[in-house]
Length: 140
Image 1 (cartoon, rainbow, N blue to C red):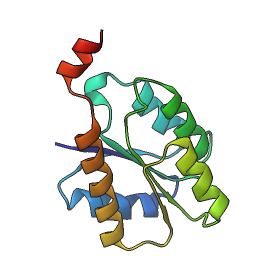
Image 2 (image 1 turned 30 degrees about the vertical axis):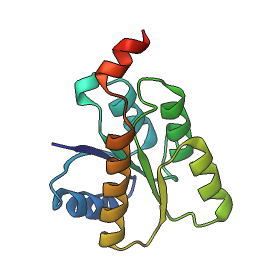
Image 3 (image 1 turned 90 degrees about the vertical axis):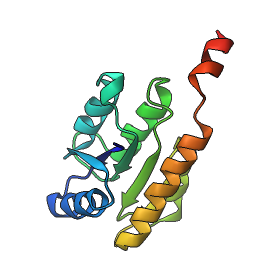
Image 4 (image 1 turned 30 degrees about the horizontal axis):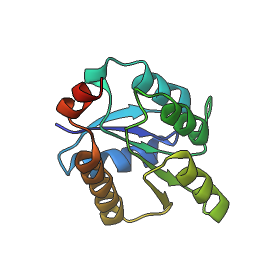
């Protein structure tokens, strides 16, 4: 089952995202702040890492930009697609997120269908571009 980490400090928004994606058959992991999101992703065993992260920008303890930059700098988590869902709708915020390695950027409010399709697109892209174990072993 595909695992998605939803990192959002607003519990009501987190619940809506969780219900929207769970209805599509995804297993949801929740984080209420950036530090927890990073901990659940970077410090978890490989089998426990999420397949995708839905990440808010404005969160306590570690903001979404910091989480994204740390994940993309770590070779063990750099491959995980990150879809930003944020109330920050300035072009410079989206540009910063995309340059840091985000797969997509959605501004709040969003429609459930938009979130579903962008998550699916990011997961499909990851599956089609992820190196196989065979090719990794040949590179060594």
